[in-house]
Length: 234
Image (cartoon, rainbow, N blue to C red; front, top):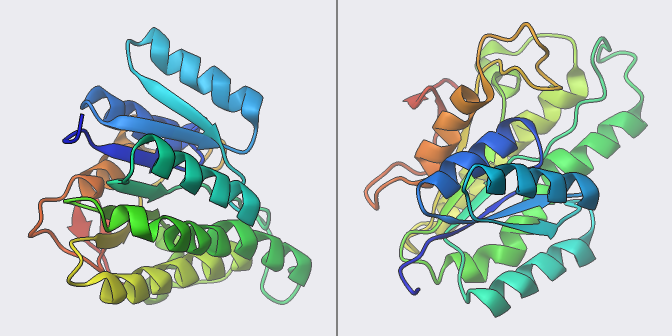
């Protein structure tokens, strides 16, 4: 159906990404759940299917250009456009570390997933997003990437998320006039593998702002940084 919206969600097999896939699919959006681990991606797809939701799974390693190109080719072949890209996949391997002792190798590895991957996806999928009547890019960032509230600890995670915020501003400017809106958000402290069991928000609550940004009207904001659907300081 030509009016059907198509969405790609990275890191969709668990946590916030899984909640985003559930929310989008429940609203009738054809959702492509992506994950690096094929087995885990298929399990997530079946879990959502058992809830009565139509989900497509496609493997994706955001650090692998060939994997990204495969997803782009699949999306072009099957749908000819893309309406929503949610860059959710991220890693954090520096918990408890400080800027003066974090191994640079860990910083590099986290940059590959948390920044370079989203950038390569935006580059590869831009032609399809521009074919949409309402293209939307949502980068799932973190409050730890806010320079306004920057502190110590978890330096690589903070740096990668700050860089993702900067990328959001750059692309929002470059997409201006195309109908593609680009925003980033802090989902809050969510009960995921990364957030821990003591976090204050459920997965569905964490998914709320990313989904809201994915479904903005054409006069919605672009180049913004949001938490709980409200602007937050950079």
